[in-house]
Structures are given as C-alpha cells and as structure tokens.
Image 1 (cartoon, rainbow, N blue to C red):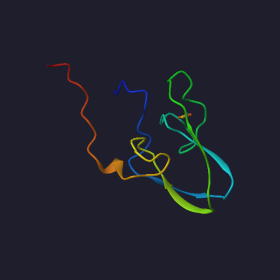
Image 2 (cartoon, rainbow, N blue to C red):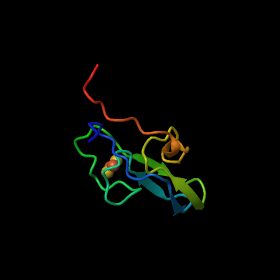
Image 3 (cartoon, rainbow, N blue to C red):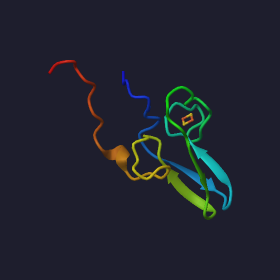
Image 4 (tube, rainbow, N blue to C red):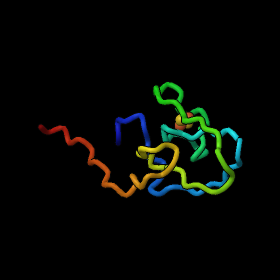
Length: 90
Ligand code: FES
C-alpha cells in the first residue's frame, strides 16, 4: 500500500470530449470516484485539482495514472515502471 497522497486511478489515459470555453476540474489526487474529474475526495490531502478552460472543442486524452508532467494531459508516464514499495531495508 502506497503512502503517497496521490493514487494511481488507472493504467491508461481516458479520452474525453471538451467544449471550447468550458471550465473543467481534473482530479490530481487520484481519489475521485468520478475520474478524471474531481469529486472533492482530495480534501485533507494537501493536493488541489487542476482547473482549466478548454481552448477548443474536441477530444483529448486525460491522465489517470496521475504521474503526468503535463497535467491534465497524458504524457505517457503511465508506461513507465511503477516504483516498488519500500521494503523497509536499507
Ligand atoms: S478528488 Fe482528486 S483532486 Fe479532487
């Protein structure tokens, strides 16, 4: 079990349709039950969602692994190996 406040919500991005000018709130903590959108489950984690306005209408791939370097968009970080949990040994 990870001690990180950020949870991996999926192992691949999700394709969503955005509408130009609309405001969206992407879940950055991975705890939302309404992925990829924030449902308020980040409360108390110290992590805030990413609020953005769509620059154009169309489909985009949003990150679910929550490791992207270009939130909320997928940057293929989900393909990188996941660090193994600390075994406690030095
Ligand atoms: S529920 Fe994850 S950032 Fe809000």
